Length: 486
Image (cartoon, rainbow, N blue to C red):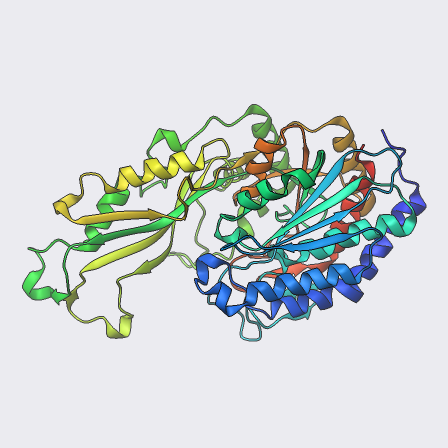
């Protein structure tokens, strides 16, 4: 066990993080937000457009400009794949043989609509400690915060292990290129003792939050075709089955539309007792904030629309340990202004199926395709094309390993020092494919999965923001945990 940091050292780490964010990180992220570097799933011509290349090169130059002692950085480019930043910083603690791996990504989700009139996805605005714009919080800040956390230690002469970084550019597409990079870089990664993943969220902005689990995901396009061209609805309806009705029938195989429960039992898993206990503890901290933090519309009676449950414990479990289906896009529909009396030839939905952490993503993808396509009603052409590469369809979730005593102590100490409150534990409903990959490849590594995506930050949606004061404290907390790594 390393000696605890002195109060003066802890204070100095916080002061360095404050200065780093104000003078260097916020300006860098302001430039980053202005670049529409959408993930390959949302920009098929990403290579020709060069926007992912731009944000990767900009981040790499920023890292190199910091002149961290011994730092070696390479932008790795495997043929046909998105670029990745790999950096390697030698240990400053004598005799240290372990490695800390820090992770983030630079690709972004699409624009989406509904932004406040004075905001936009690619027009950064810093207001009241919040930096608005697409990608700053998810997850452009990660590389800048990671380097600053290391710098803070080195400036104070606080010993630490070797640190390496993986900053990818296809996470929002399910990280299809990451396995190839991990395999190519495996001999250079070393003995990974701690993974610091800065791509997750927080239950509030009042304490350090450790992510205890992540859901997996299968996404893809479900399409129903019944005609070769649109036909007069008066002439054909009642005889030609609606492609939308057929699609509804097919989805009824998957989901109980009344409750939202996924019907195949293979898409569910047993919730571990430890996660149940953590959900109860987190519910006691957050209470109704668990569901009230969302932007509910006006309901039928004039009050707000309601969630599936107002029980904070069940709300936490629903969004982290239970499978859910969302329709995130559609094709085959004309705009309302152009919707004539025509029976449409086809309907297509983009499906996003979130899976519990212990369900295999690839196997679920195969099962989902078979479920949706077999025995199509009216012998219609029904196809489901899952996202991903052959042999790696779907993303498997992740359940955190038991915390080593040193890490549990370090997390609590960091949270108390930087926030004045104990660390909180929360499952997240999103997916970070890297975590299941690293859990399989480095089963002995400890995991610190955390991030700045707290209430109202709205990653992927309109008015996304980064809570800068939280980012500062998180950076200092990461410094403390790295220093405590054996």
